[in-house]
Length: 248
Length: 336
Ligand SMILES: Nc1ncnc2c1ncn2[C@@H]1O[C@H](COP(=O)(O)OP(=O)(O)OP(=O)(O)O)[C@@H](O)[C@H]1O
Ligand SMILES: [Mg+2]
Image (cartoon, rainbow over all chains, first blue to last red; front, side, top):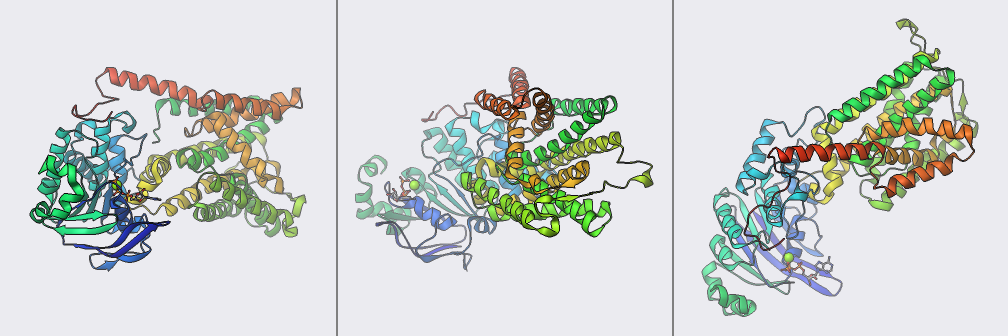
C-alpha cells in the first residue's frame, strides 16, 4: 500500500535518510522506532511530500508518487499528523475538523453553500471528534484548549479526511498515561483496512498496536521485524538501552 | 471565520440609511463625496476579502481598480461599446487580471508577496502610462455614464448617480459577505491561519488564492468602472501605487478582517480628508498620524475595536450561560 524505495536525504553534510526501504501491506500497522534525531520525522516529511528525497521513490498503491506535491498525495488518501501541533489556531475544534473534511470531500470551493451546515460533512466531523474524544469540545476555540486536547485534535484532523494511509508522528508525545490509554483504544477502533505508519516512543503502545516494527538509527533502517522479534533483538536493545529495561 | 453578526448588519444598514439621507439633503459637492466614499468602500471591501480574511496583503488593488476604470473608459470612448456591456467587461477583465496576479503570487509570502503584487501594479501602471492609444499620461476624457433612460432614470443627475454608487457598495458588501460565509470563505480563512496544513489535508492552495483574487478583483473593477463614470475621465494616476497604499490604510483604519470596518474607514476617510483639506494643506500628515494611532492602539481599527469589545461581551455572556469558552481537557496531562 505504501512503499519506500532506497530513499536518501541529507541536510548539508548531515545524512538524515540513508537508503531507506520498506513496504506496508494494506491494513498493516507499522511502528517506527528510533532514538532522537534518527531521522523519523524527516522520513515522514519525505513520504508526505513536504521534503524531496535526493534519490529514491515513494509508491502508494503501486503508483510512483515521488513527484506529487503534498496536496496531491493527500487527495490520494495519504494523511499525516505532526509531532509538533499544526492546527488552525484561532478557529474552533469543529471548524478545524470541518476544514479538513470539506477539503477531503472536494467541498473546499463551495461558494453557494456553507460547508459547516452540510449533513455529510457534519457527520464526518462528528465521527472524527468521537474517535479522538473531542465530542464535548467541538465549539471551543483551539487557542483556548489545553495541550492534550490539541494533541487529540492533531490526530483528529488527519483521521477526519478518511485516509487510506495514515502517518502519525508521535501522537502521544507529551501527554499523560490516561490519554495514552485512550490512544490504545483509538488504534483498535480504526478501520481494519486503514494502513498506519506510526512513530512512537511508548514501547507498550508500540508492541500493542504493531504488526511489524521498523527501527531507524542514524537515518538507516537497522532492523525490521515483528514485535516479538524486536523484543528479542540485541541490536535494538542496545539502541534503546535505558528505556528498554523500564519497559521490557 | 466570517460571521454576519447583528452588529455588522446594524452598522451597514445605519451607514446605508445615512448615505441615502445625506444624498438627498446635501449639495452637489456633498454628493461627489458620497460617490467617492462609495467607490473607496467597494475597493476597501475587495481588499479586505483577501487581505483580512485570506491573509494576502495586496499592493496592487489600485491597479485592479484602474483596470476596471480603463476597461470601461476604453471600450466606451474608443470603441463606442454599449456602456452596460463595457461595465460588465470591466468587471470580467479586472477579475481575469486579478486571477493572474493571484495565481502567479500564490507561492510567495510576507514581504515577497507584497513586493510581487506591487510589481504587478506598477507593470499595469506603466503599460497604461506608455500606451498612446489609451491616452498615455493624459488619460481618456469623455467617458459616458450608464444610459438608464429606458428605466426612466438619468445617471447624469447627481442624486441618482450617487444612489447608484451607494447601491453598488451595498451589493458589494453583500456579495463579499456571501462568499466569506460559504465553504470557500472558510477555506480562505484556513489558508490564512495555516496554509501548510490546508495543503496537508489536500487543498490546491494556489487555485483558492487565485479564485479569491478574481472575486476580489471583480469588486475592485466594479469600483473602478463607477469611478470612471463619476469623473467621466480616467488617467494613469488611478493605477498609481499610492492608490493601493491608500486603500490598505483605509482598511486598517476601519478594521482589517471585519468587512464592515473598510466601509466605516472609507466613509470617515473621505469626509475627514475633505474637512481637513479645506482647512489646512496637511491632510497627509493627519492621515499618517491617524494610521499610527490606529496601529499603536492595537491595530483593530475604528470599527474593529468596537466589534472586538462587543464580541468579547457576547462570549462572556455565553460562558456565564454554561457554554465553555475555555476548557482544560483531560486532567492527566503532563504538559501545560
Ligand atoms: N530542515 C532541516 N535542516 C537541517 N537539519 C535538519 C532539518 N530537519 C531535521 N534536521 C536534522 O536531521 C536530524 C533528524 O531529524 P528528525 O527530526 O528527522 O529526527 P527524529 O527521528 O524525528 O527525532 P525526534 O525523535 O527528536 O523527533 C536531526 O539531527 C535534525 O537536527
Ligand atoms: Mg521527530
